[in-house]
Each structure stands twice: as C-alpha cells, then as structure tokens.
Amino acid sequence: MILEHGRLLDDFTPGERIAHPWEVTVDAGMLGLFQASFLEATPTYASELYARELGFRARPVPPTLLLNLALSMSVHDVSERAVAHLAYIDVRFPEACYLGDTVVAASTVLGVGESREGRGVLHVATELHVLDGALVCSFERKVLVRARGAVTPKLVARPAEPDRLLPSNLRGSLTKPKRAHGFARLSLASGDVLVHAAGRTVTEAEHVMLAWLTRNTHPLHSDEVYCRNGSFMKTRVVYGGLVLGWTLALASRDVAGPAIWDVGFDRGAHPAPVVAGDTLYAATRVSSVEPRPDGTRLVTMRLVGVKNHPATAFLERDLFAPEKDKPEGARILDKVVEIDRTILTW
Image (cartoon, rainbow, N blue to C red; front, side):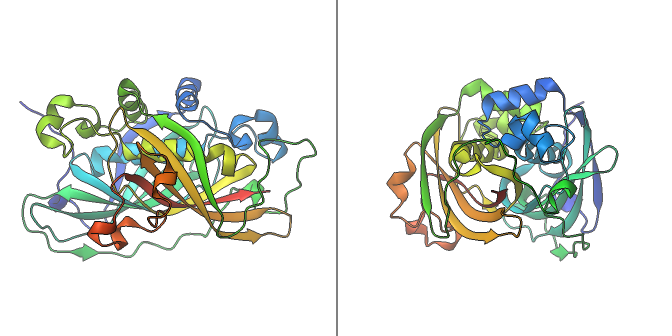
C-alpha cells in the first residue's frame, strides 16, 4: 500500500478550518540551529538583557523562525501537492513566543480558484498559537495547487480580527535603554536605497535540514528522485521561507541592528527559485518613516533578494517594482524574493 500526503485543489472548501497535526516545542537546539544559519542583528532577539529592558519576560523567538514554523507546519494539509508558493500577505507577529513554548498551527481556506491546465490558486489564512492560546504569527498566503479536475471558484471573507501590530509590552510609550545596544542607527528617510554588500551561498545539506527542522514536508525540497520529474528545476528547490530568512539576514546589520520588533510583512513573492549553490544578495528601499510620540519610528521598506549577482547589477532595472507587474521582457529573472517589511525602531 502506497500512502500519500497532501490535498488537491478539489479537496478544499472555502470557510473550512484545518488544524494542522504538528505540535512543536521551540527548544534550545532548534533556536541554536536557526541562529547558526541566519545572521540575527536585532538585539531584541539576540540579547536577554535588552529584551528584559523592553519589558519582555525573556528573549523572544525571532519572528522569522515563527513565520517559517507556521508556513512549514501548514504544508502537510495545505501545500504538500503545491506547484509553487505565490504570495505572502499581511504577515503579523502580535505577541512574543519564548524558548520552551509549544506552538500549534491552523489554517482557514479563504478562496479556491478556477483550475486551469490541472492547477489552480488556493488562498488560505494561517495562524500560529502558543498552546496556551497566545497568537504569535498570522498571515495569508496563496499557493498554486494541482487539481484532479474542473473546480468552480469560491471565496469567503476572512473574519475581522483585532488590529494588533505590536506585542502588549510595546504598545505604550517606550523608554529607550540608557546603554547603547545593537548596531549604529542609520538616519533612514523615505526613498533611501541601501545595497547590502554581503553575499550568502546556500549549501546543499543545510536547506534540507532546515526545511525539516521547521516541519516542511514537501518532497520538492528534500526528495531528489521525486524532483527529477516533479520539480520544474529537475532538482531540489530551496524552501521559500528560508530564502526570505536569509535575505532578511543579509540586510540585518544595516536596517535591523537598532530595531525593536518586526511589525510584519506584506506584498511578498518569490519570482524565481533558488537551488543549492546559489549565492544570495539583498537591497532595501525605504518606503516610509512614521515617527511615534515616544521617539520610536515605524519604518516600512521594500526588501528584495537576488541570486548569483550583487544587487548593484540590477539597480537600473526597476529592481524594487513587483515582477508580476512588468512586461515579460523587463523582468529580472534572478530576483528570488520581494516583500514589504515594517519594523519598529529607535
């Protein structure tokens, strides 16, 4: 008997809520492996002392790890038969998660698109909760999923949720710690373009290990035999959440060194795939800077990642515009991630 996992587009019903089977405790080993692969410059996630000065009970788990856990834990039920991940939408981190917390995930089906050529777009909202109930990550995403036959498009509205941008201890007025923390503060202004010089080569074993660490079970990322026929690249493709995480890491010292919290992400996509051996580079364009009464600022920026060429090679090619909005001949074929990011910073 051959046992297969994953669902086809026909198997989803708009409004359906799916409780994913994984129950994962964030332990020191997981956090250590994650920190060894992703350069985390934000002191909130790196320094126990700084985190406590901000009012956290301990050093919180980096939001990038929470996003990767939520994405990966949903793969078993949502996208194990997907062709591609299409979009990140309205990613939020409303409360902190801590070492030793156990997290669970659930998704709600928001839309099932029409199937064409044996595939269609699935739209889901996913939440990651600590087992005691605290919501630590939420987002919507769209995936291209295989279908067994014709599917009639159906949509449902997502229930309204409280507009919580920040964890409870960060929602009031903050007092800046007297001791300097983190990297030098850049005087960011709307329109600034920052090219992050460092590159990062993806290694062969690393991306498979990290995909499984976060519970991503899609064979596209781990099964070379499956990929000979089942992968558009004819080999294992790096899981997109890792590509996003490494791109964020490449920008970390320059834009997140003085940051307090990752408020969230939006309008994200992976225009091109990454395989082992590719080298990633990043660039950022500041979209807006919103001062707050306590001296902090909400900074929104457009982050892009490219592969195998420094980002300077693409600056004159409308690097920060969404690839889906460009005519085919103008697209940057080596752009591997693009996303809006908002941080709370001093």
